[in-house]
Length: 239
Image (cartoon, rainbow, N blue to C red; front, side):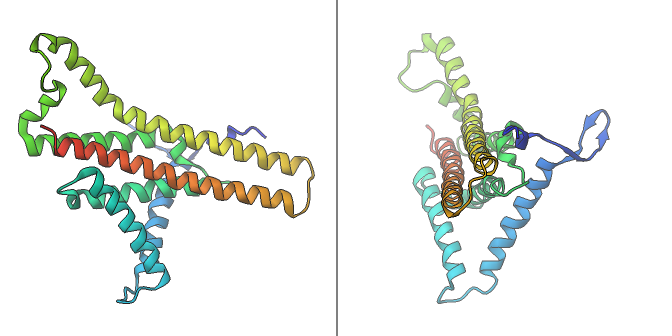
């Protein structure tokens, strides 16, 4: 089987409006599932919050504390205002990564458009935060202090390109890691199946690879989150 077949976007419910294709696809389906399952998972573990936490409550509190410390270190003072957004991005990206590990599923984080939307949203929010806190003076970030004004026609375009490249680098990093990882997993699983290998050893190998890919899914969601936090911190505390 073609290992790239798993990344094919398929229309489930066709719909067009004023010439725009707004069809509900398998990518849309798994985005919705990521929201529902992520929210449901958190609700299930926190439905009975206790002073002495249960195992589920401890897991969520540890995860939330981990993301909170990441946001605190990356954003600095005032990080609390952006913590809900940062945590939501992490959960959404991780669920999208993890769901793609199941058979017959779809990894929407392997697609440039949905991941790019998250990255561009982070850039827009960062810009809004910078302008909100520093006014028009935030645009001085495109002309670093100490640079001779005569170099402005050269420095400003470079800084602007670097700024606009942030969502592109975020998107490509996540998408390529998901694509490569899932292709490798698909090839090895097909090899085990087609070769007729039986027994515990091949299944154990595939299981270990799945656990490894789950770790990669978490790591890539964390990297996406921490870079988004850093961009927010730069906008919030820019001079």
